[in-house]
Image (cartoon, helix red, strand yellow):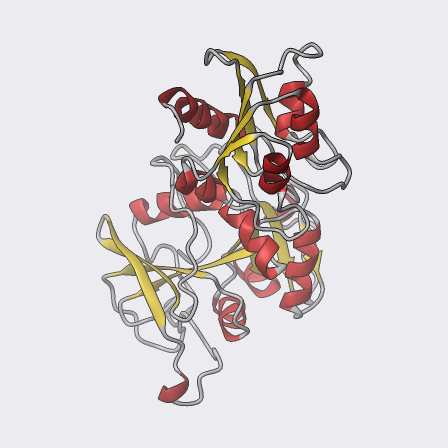
Length: 357
């Protein structure tokens, strides 16, 4: 059983893990405790090819200083050799007597570190602060299990399911509270995706902004999908991060390429055509639907063909939450057959929305 000191150290390790970048590798933190419970060293993973969190912490100690110590780590120490060696071996060679970790490694290649440690006589305690550790790297776990980023598809609509009035105007269907929420969620994504039609019609910047219009610190990378050219003076080309352009309608191929670049979470905000395509191809892990109490009528539906020829083929959803945002409602829903969960932490402050919200 973990001690109070070890639990506190795990919470510190989770804070350290968040300092690391999101990418091809999980965010991991580690704390080395002396036999008396004092912190000897701290570490976190700083990106692909750099020392893992445990080795980062051990590197701060002189030879022999970790003998008899306890290593507190947010993820099971790895048991494989990639760009770096097995962390389980590094801990054994350092003389660590006890390892406390939060979450089992979900990958076949790296799992087994706990067994290796136990075989070497190291005392191992598992599943401490597990929910927090899983929430931290939920998108990375999704990437390992599916081979693609987690995909959130967002749209805003009137109460009668329209994304715009018949003349094409859509600003603003929803109110300022909903638009602030959208920007907060954009900032949590690694990439924000729009179609060339939306880029041509609305000229969105695809940025995450604060209430005063300034850019938030965390910006998703803009991605534009479609075979039409994007104008040289388009707002997306002035994004603080270099946009990616995919002249294709092959969404799985786009997601596979984004995964290879370390993108874990994708936010789709590209209008009805692109939203419908992601839903139709079964690539939407989460739906964010902002519903405003207005009626528009007409033909500008928020979704088009999603591959449902009859009621028997309807795409059933599980509603995870319903949140009032001023006069509007936000429905968070996921495919009923999977019920995929993802972190819901959203900062309170954000700014004005753009596009079709």
